[in-house]
Amino acid sequence: MMETIYPKLRKQLDQYSVGFPEAKSGVDLKILKKLYTEPEAELFLDLSMQLEDPVSVAGRTNRDAAETAEMLETMAKKGLVFRKKKQGTAYYAAIPFVIGSFEFQLNRMDKSFAQMVESYFNEVYLHNLGEFLPPLRTIPVNHSIDATQKVAPYSDARAIIQSKDKIAIANCICRTQNNLLEKGCGKPLEVCFVFGSHAEYYLDNKMARQIDHDEALAILDKCEEAGLVHQPANMINPGGMCNCCGDCCGVLRALNKLPRPAEQVANIYWASVDPERCTGCELCMERCQMQAIQLNGDQIATVNTDRCIGCGLCVTSCPAEALSMVVKPEEKQMMPPESGMDLMIKTAEKRGTSLIPLSMTEK
Image (cartoon, rainbow, N blue to C red; front, side, top):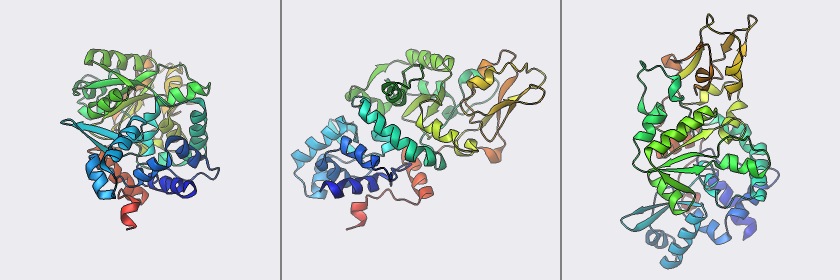
């Protein structure tokens, strides 16, 4: 069974989000064998991305209800499926590898798994992750936006946090992985916000701690000071917000490999330089995660708008106040999808895949 179930599982995961493409080295299957038992892989293949209670799953797939409930809860604790509780009943759904089961491995990440994932990212993900709708989007740090500018709530990190009823903070999975590989960047670790039902999932799985709005805003300020990029989930009402660096973050690393990463990022801003104020100190170049800023022949900073993803870190670091965030021309602006499911549908359309489980289409 093992020789067939894991390739089927890989094929199914490749349908979701940015996919899980085959690796010629076989490290993709090694990852799946480490995460899933064979029975868990079989059950995952029968799940959809729509939340279902165990009784419904069991009835639909001719399984014992009690055994199905036990296995689904075990898989949820292992970060292999999503769990949402409503009025005392747990509902479960299939999830992608990114963003999904990889991020949910905070409690299971060890050096061997970290190395497997790094090998897989280098062989596969970093070469195609940036070509599709990214699972994260970039928004500017608040202090980079002029107070007179009207900012949409979904592009305002502080507004996103203040709009949430339940907030939890977790360690960054990417920095956790790189620390195990002794390639850590030294940036703050506890910087990933999760909201609402996603916060409940993290808290139930003991992957995060609950915080209030004041602490969340203080952490946000520390992230800005550390030069981290605010990256909420790529939707108007995000269930989480990462604070990322170009050294560790898989999304930023993949975008960096593209000649025009700005085309892939749902943002309405880019940086602009006032040449009369610029002193050529290069602090903005050090803060930029996308190598979007260079000095011209006159030693004045210039912004490559094909590479600028609009994070605003250059603006807050400029002692001469020569940089500012400006709204892109309308034809260059990208609006984020409405919801997580909308993002999944749009990504599947762009990749030519389907969110319908393969087991259902084959029957």
